Image 1 (spheres, protein in one colour):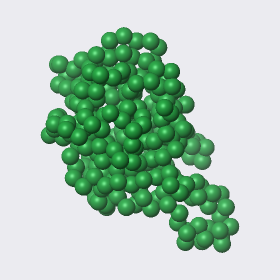
Image 2: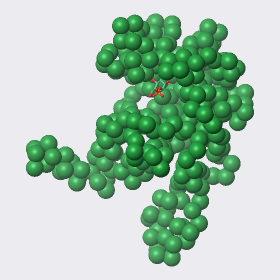
Image 3: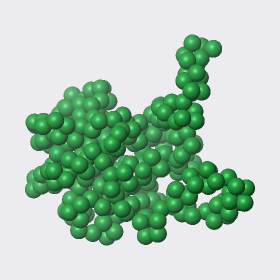
Image 4: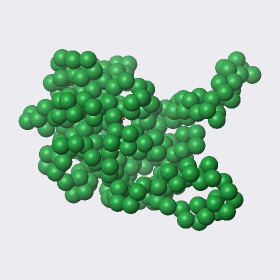
Length: 290
Ligand code: G1P
């Protein structure tokens, strides 16, 4: 069955970029001229996703409003004949019935957040995109994974290599054999100490999962950091279902961290026709200490 739905967990507090995120959801921080979450939604849409389930929490209302129509704003732009920007504003509106919002009341972990979407996903394969991570790739990271999924089925997690010193911040896979970008694995572990990490291939934050994961998440015990971890439930699902890692082509930016966010802004500014030249000049000047 085709992957039609995606879950975006957006309930997190954004503690790594406080106090900026005290009143603004971290997913709404701008990367050049669009909020970070827009890039992730676009990635999902490019991959053929038709319905997005946002798992939200308190203080996340701005996300819901962003994907809704803003009647007063549109009218005002129309009156002023600002057609180019009006078009861009209109493009942010998700068509009726293609977005759902469900609340995770307590921050019990990523696994619990995904479990909150179970009724809306139902009994079909689905994608998960962690909006902290923006992946710049052509085709998009999830589109590459969907293509692989259409060939092999099962469950797929995106991975990319990190320096060994950083593996303890991520989920890490144990690779077994490789066919191009597709990797067969023998296990995965959440936030392992560097000494016992099975590889330096970290889980990037893009997944295609079979719905049986929900049954496992329902009774998943808390793991790393005292949280219900998606990685732990996936490791259990591996015992009965095919799992692959996919080393995608592209570059990822972790917008949940100060430096990652800055890097994302810079990368997209250097890529945007409106800002590219100016951004290049600025970088040169700043690097030269001017
Ligand atoms: C989550 C996942 C982890 C993954 C990471 C990617 O961790 O649990 O497996 O490697 O996202 O960013 P978190 O960043 O929520 O600690």
